[in-house]
Image (cartoon, rainbow, N blue to C red):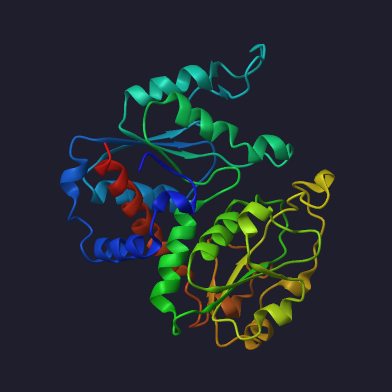
Amino acid sequence: MKTFINVEDIGDLRQALAEAQELKQERFKYQHLGKNKTLMMIFFNNSLRTRLSTQKAAMNLGMNVIVLDVNAGAWKLETERGVIMDGDKSEHLLEAIPVMGCYCDLIGVRSFAGLTDREYDYAETVLKQFIKYSGRPVFAMETATVHPLQAFADLITIEEYKQSKRPKVVLTWAPHCRALPQAVPNSFAQWMNAADVDFVVTHPEGYELDPKFVGNARVEYDQRKAFEGADFIYAKNWSNPGVTNPEDYGKITCRDMSWTVDTEHMAWTNQAKFMHCLPVRRNLIVTDDVIESPDSIVIPEAANREISCSVVIKRMLEAL
C-alpha cells in the first residue's frame, strides 16, 4: 500500500478488520517491520487523537517518529504555484516536500480545508503534492475532504459493539458555533457504504454531502424518522458543503438547536450507541447526559484510532 486516502486503499474490509483485531491483541508483534525506519508526521493543523494515536502506532511497530508542526517551529510554507513570494512565507512546498522525503520512510499529512474555495479543497492540492514530490508512501491524517484513519477506527468500533449482523447506522448533522470541514462525515459515509450496515444520513436541507461520498446511502431530512430503530448514532457537524448552492460552501447556513442529540433523540433509537470523533462541543452537538451515558462509546472509539493506524502503517512498511 503506497497511499491511504480512501476506503478502496485498504482492500478487503473483512481482512482489514481481522488484522485490526490481531494487532489489538498483539500490538508489538510486528516491531521488526519498523526497525531503523522513520515516520514523519506533518501537521498543518492542530491535533490531539491523530497525533498521539499515530505516533503510538508507529512506535508499536518499531519505528522512529519525527513530528513537524508547520505553523510552529518551521518556515511558513507557500502552497500555490506561480506566486511571487514577497510575503511572510519563506519556503515553497515544492522544495520542502522532497527535503522532508530525504529524512524518512513514510509520511503522514494533516491539512484541513480552507472552506473558502471548494474547488481547491476538493482537489486535495496539498496532499497530492506530497504524493507526487516526496518519493515516499503517504497516508492522510485528515485532509481537506477525508479522514480515513478516523473512519476505519469507527468501523472497528461498530464491529466490536454491534448486536446484529447488519446494524442500522445513522450519521446525523448537529449544530456548531464554528464552520467545520466535511472530512469526517465524508469518510464516515464512504466507509459505511463499503461496510455491511444499513446506513442513513440525516441533516437539514441544503447540507447535502458530495455525492461521491454519500453513494447509495439513504438521505433522510426528518431526524426523528432517521433515528427510529438505529443501533448506532454518529453525530457530527459540518459546514455547508456547497453541493446545492456553491456560494454557501464553508458557511454556517443552519443553527437549528433541535438537531442537538439529547436523551429524547436517543429514545427514538434501538438503544443505540452514541459515537463522535472528538473533540466535541457539549450541549451543541450532544448533551452531557448522552455523552456520559453507558451507551456512549466515544472513548473506545478514540482508542481504536491507534489500531486503525497500526494496520495502515504495517501495510505500508510491508510494501517498502
